[in-house]
Amino acid sequence: MTLVIGLTGGIASGKSTVSSLLKELGFPIVDADVIAKEAVDQGKPAYSKIAEVFGHRVLQPDGAIDRAQLGSEIFADPEKRKMLNEIVHPEVRKEMIRQRDESIQQGSKAVILDIPLLFESKLTHFADKSLLVYVTPETQLERLMKRNGYTQKEAQQRIDSQMPLDEKKSLADEVLDNNGTREETEIQLLGILRKWKISE
Ligand SMILES: CC(C)(COP(=O)(O)OP(=O)(O)OC[C@H]1O[C@@H](n2cnc3c(N)ncnc32)[C@H](O)[C@@H]1O)[C@@H](O)C(=O)NCCC(=O)NCCS
Ligand SMILES: Nc1ncnc2c1ncn2[C@@H]1O[C@H](COP(=O)(O)OP(=O)(O)OP(=O)(O)O)[C@@H](O)[C@H]1O
Image 1 (cartoon, rainbow, N blue to C red):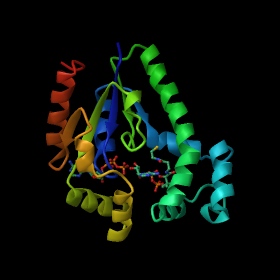
Image 2: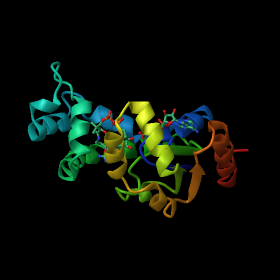
Image 3: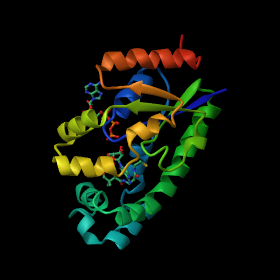
Image 4: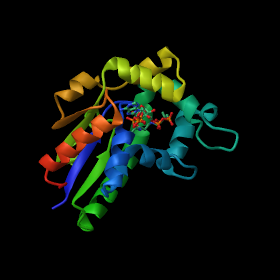
């Protein structure tokens, strides 16, 4: 039996940091952000729809999607975000399920689905357990501004486009507090994996 773990959090809460630890432990990772990036490559159906709906201003001179421009538009406008989600999310779901089922067929002990919008998109049924990477609103804002070089306004808009992490806390099976050091987070993670009987 493969345990399917839905790893979630908020923007810049530390999902990639935790998924790297899980990868090092040998678990296969299905990454929704990576799949969403591939889904909008030139030639893919979602690419043509984005060009049609958002126009040429979201394309770079070489034709590829200008992610910074598209991001600044959709995080400032819930209607545009909904339109983009409706184009990209169905493609992402199909591919996530394909990769998840491949790991199950290969008999992996566990497979990790790294899905930022696990709760917002009501995808908890994709996984057996949900694991939330939690930080306080202050830590989240600070780490996001630092990592992406966003202004406070840009960072806050992105945070506000998601369900608050305090709300996600009550929905998750387990919560990893990532306000401390990476080592402290790793210790908590190992404890949860032992509890779920997928680690010694
Ligand atoms: C808007 C886009 C072009 C911005 O690209 P950019 O390279 O700047 O960011 P990246 O893709 O690395 O996403 C970073 C984080 O932003 C957050 N985020 C991305 N899209 C969304 C969204 N539609 N709603 C809320 N949060 C989002 C997630 O926490 C994600 O981890 C891109 O995020 C996108 O295509 N989003 C739509 C697809 C999507 O919802 N992806 C999230 C997981 S399926
Ligand atoms: N415990 C920690 N201590 C200090 N910095 C951390 C810690 N965990 C993560 N970070 C830093 O915080 C930032 C966000 O972490 P990470 O990229 O793992 O988040 P994420 O949830 O995957 O983000 P996104 O969904 O936006 O891609 C990164 O710059 C990372 O190096």
